[in-house]
Length: 506
Image (cartoon, rainbow, N blue to C red; front, top):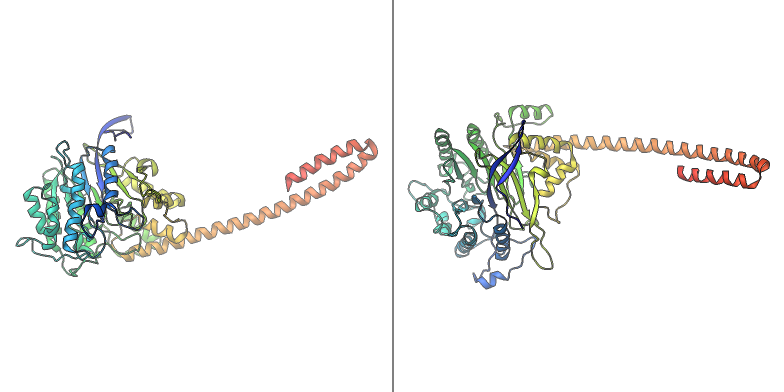
């Protein structure tokens, strides 16, 4: 298996130029399933299966393949959910998070490798006990007990200053190089499932104020940013539910929309699905309203904001294929150029994953980059091409053989509308209702057209057959005359030719 190359040819209006491409290796949502005994031998016996979280052997298998493919990525990104789903003891939770991080460190934080694992310190909802539980504490006066419970996993990979900051807040900023800062978010308090309920707080942990100030400082310093986190600020494609409380989605979007010139990427996990959300511009919002979509939120013109991407999961809990991703980015502009998904089906016989390259966005979706303009063109094509949208849907679960079809009007409407970055459930639902009605109308028109065509074809066929019968009768009459005039041999040849003609008509 060849390593990923570091060069990529791109075509501009005048000629072909070669640019240097750097790579992000992106793992997420392992949900490491270790034995309750915390015994390594017991953990090694846990099977790999659809519908279950990932045992250690599945994580090792993924890392083995990734290491051969990309031995020294520019950075290793992990967007949360280290531990298995379920009610976990503090001891089990701590052990699961530590083993997940330490296993990744064996491959990508070694003496011969410059990769940092700071950007694996992203907390998922499954990294707390109970699930989604974290008290909102004052970062100026104390460490957060839930964060500090698991932060020992990064004792050997994170600087002391970053670790102290992280223990108090659950978020941090990491300088990838002199030009790019990776901002990690603590998304847990924004979830509607967060316990205790703190949805009345305008800014849990002071994170929004910090994010705004950080982006302002980066712009002032001439630097760029990637924003990463676990739970994405979206309306979910699966249930049409908000992943963040809607007020928090709006606040986040209001902040990032002010810094479209420096934000180059937004990466999240959680949904176990490879998806994106296209920002809505004012013109697109107006177009939706003209098509009957009731738009509740006042979408500012964010056409220059980069799309928001969700990544694959290693855990096959939701019958998705285990998968990870590699992002290509321009080493000069830091624009995201492409993504490649690596994964495979789980063999029932061997419990092994047939790791391979599943698809690359540039070839699969016909895009030259992952910019807003290119993604917009893809969405326009998908809206008019049911098979293309179906392929996007199939790819979302890393091409799992257990993935169902999505060609009916309801499923197509839901997934088409999920391509847009809505702020409210009402807006998403209105889009689905309007799109479903339009697709159902199109389907009915097609059926009527097919029915009409079938009727016309039946009428035409009947006419042709009747004509053939009449012609045959005429030929029989002629043949009889030929028989009288030219003998049986000539008549037989004429009738044989007509039987062939009649059979062809029918």
